[in-house]
Image (cartoon, rainbow, N blue to C red; front, side):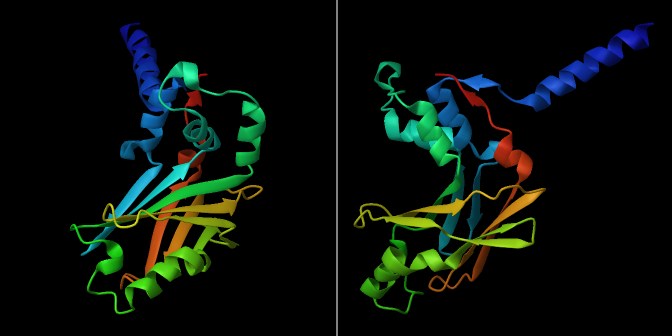
Length: 203
């Protein structure tokens, strides 16, 4: 009888520890998405730079667009319509961060002139991003934006967007084929659970 009572309690505790949060307020939601331990934010460190990637769910994007930090200022007009439109794509924030105070465009390993490298990130880098679905289907980058900071910080930020696949079974591989930093192919893998098991935003 004692065993029968203990086993269900153990199973309930195990399920609770794995289920994760169900609903979060805007601040908690943003913090959860950006926390590395939750699987949406990933990093790879190399000799001179660290490459970071963040998958941005539709609610996260809409929240970043419409909220300045206080609940009373959150614009929820046409919220479902906006989130529905964003859900038709997969959006990632891609970051190249120097491991020193030298801006990535000024690293000595880059042999091309500074403005040639800048022009690449402004106009040509989009072609070097792909998304591989279940190791079979390859999607090209649909939308791309380089967020220029004019050297105010040793980082480069890019928004990289793909059309959402109609279905996938196990994983998505985000691939960047680097032609300038001497790194080559950079691969980040997301499981389906990481993409889909996300807390609900409580508005």
